Image (tube, rainbow, N blue to C red; front, side):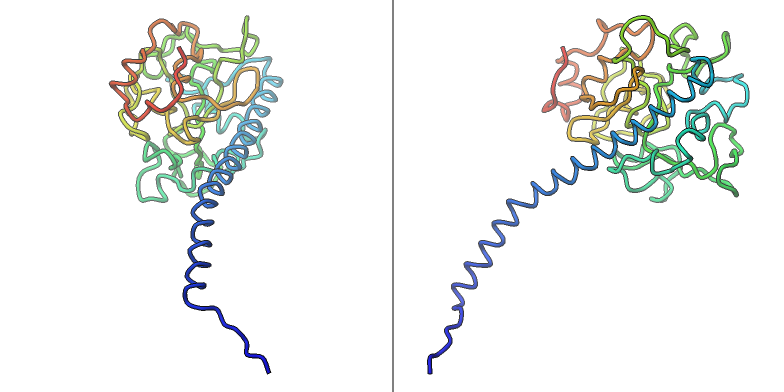
Length: 281
């Protein structure tokens, strides 16, 4: 009767070492695939929101919502989350990039956002979801991780605009003369919107909290959420990745001056964490 041969300790250790080696090779690849899938889902969300914008514009003679503006009519109904709500079905998931898993209030902070690259803004307080909160600029229970280009709105002429923005800077309507594939509509963001300017400096580190000063507006969008990129929808309703340094090369508003954007040296000095990312000279 033959004797069954068992694995020796050395053989078992070799097998375990091979498995560990394969895992060390496969895990980063699997992580990249998983993040790429989340990026695709993020772009799908933005495509739905871009379609919602398109439907809204069709119903309102090509005019954008009034957005954030002191003196705007029905203040809370003019924010993009509320103005587009019936067109995107009030889905919280559509407002959330899959790379974000928690909101500011989930981590014990407030709803204002700015708590990190992968932390969403919200959830806003209130008794009944869908009802305006006491601040009258948001809706109860709202949360998300996208923000609109604050200049793609139609505020009342002559009213005080957010962060000192001038009324003539706004796009107001979708029928803009010239190319519209470089005019941001809505992107990955730490807040529900922002009003970037050409002279805005880069954040000192990834996910640096934003402030209400107009100098900090680009900081809301410049977050390393997709390996050197954010996802964005544009005024032609297309969706694509946007390099972090490319954010300064987008036509945010009518008076945006590309000649006054940060240089390579300024990027390198002010934001060394962004050095590995592509330049857009």
